Length: 589
Image (tube, rainbow, N blue to C red; front, side, top):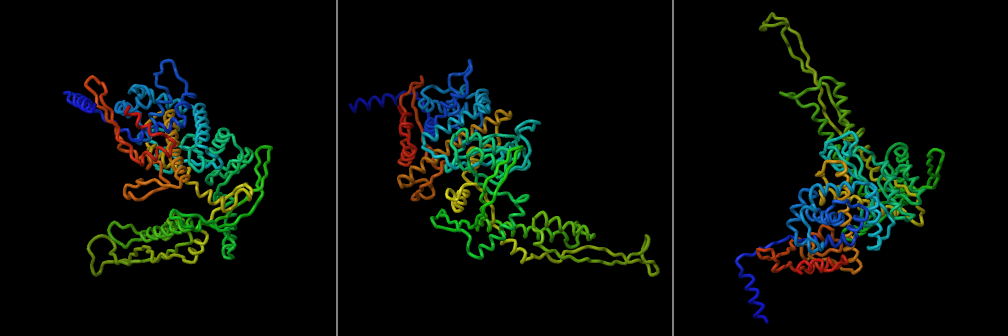
């Protein structure tokens, strides 16, 4: 039997001409299996209609395969997909159960998909169903929702009513932008709802529509919505209250609050001296318990009136001091003071060729004030200057001088800054006021203490990870599409990719926590190091260099298929995700 098998293998490989095809499988089977478990293809097909001349490959499978490419390569260009599909024919055939060809991913077809995703009616229903599916499949408990906005720079042409507009940019002030508003489920940081709007719009008016969509999708009262100071608009707080939800957000240092904050800080400083502030401790990344903040709270009555309707409710105000925030502000002040001093000293260089001199006192005073104001160090720096007069004897009229030639004395005036000193007393007073913030909520004390509220808000970075992933791994900027509907659709498609990353990370971490174990070999620089909190990016990277080799004869008949064996780490990850290794081994069949 062995002899016959060996001779058969020798007969196969002794053929004159063979084709050897190698496909870079990597994390594609895992990603697609994860998306199938999330129900993405079925949900897409449920809400995006087919048309009469549409190719056989459904919109759902088109979306899933495109997302797998984007997540693997970090490239969302439509033009790249045809070549990718050609190079992954065998892998995609095994996974999808049908041939996948380049025409399924033509530029026009992908543009149609983006146009469908930009349809607000379709998109809202897709998000709604994905939320229900994820909550049910992964046994998620919606309690806290975090809302925030970001901008995405673009180099597309600006049109009067287009999405791409100039606005307050968080990335590049020289480029126009679009704005993305997202609500994320805590503690995953998974996007529940996303809205794309034109780049010039302010954040304030974007919260209520987003909150309403999340509320309609989750169909659960008593959710705690957390956001930045722009969410603290009184209308937004009143809307949450009337919708049966709660809020937790910082107050902006503007208007009436800016004046009140001075009094609140003074009271906080007094309470700190009396040692009666409430401490808030947390565990840092080294497992050491450290002081995160300390503060106090008081209650007040809040009122909002809209037309003839008036809403009144009791509100709690947390006045909190963060040592880390204070250190950050102090370091920022020192940098501003140093830069301001350098610029002030350069105002009056010593006389020399090409060195402009200031000869008017009012001009110098104005220049000093401008620099001090620009660096926000009023009253903290004091510049001293002096008037310097140089007298020169000059002959009257033209020609050479002589003993009997009439002369006059000419004065040349310049001003010289002699010293720039810091007002140490005022700087010290200023620094005592650093690190203070005010937060508001209407949740009762027995449900949310000051301690829990501050620790909860410190996790605000979770929603920002959505934006971080969009701008790093998924390379949302620049958007390689031009039309508004494609810009909007592409942004929504990339938020679906973030959902996948978020759930992969959450499920693996939850499984490791439940089993009280850690994953090895996640750090190439230190193979002995283990981790209980691997990032989705590192999880996917663990599947790099998984290759499928296919040997065919010249007629295209498959002689042999061989997949690089999965490592123990890869098998562990698949198991932690609740998947089966057959998502890879099926490629050899």
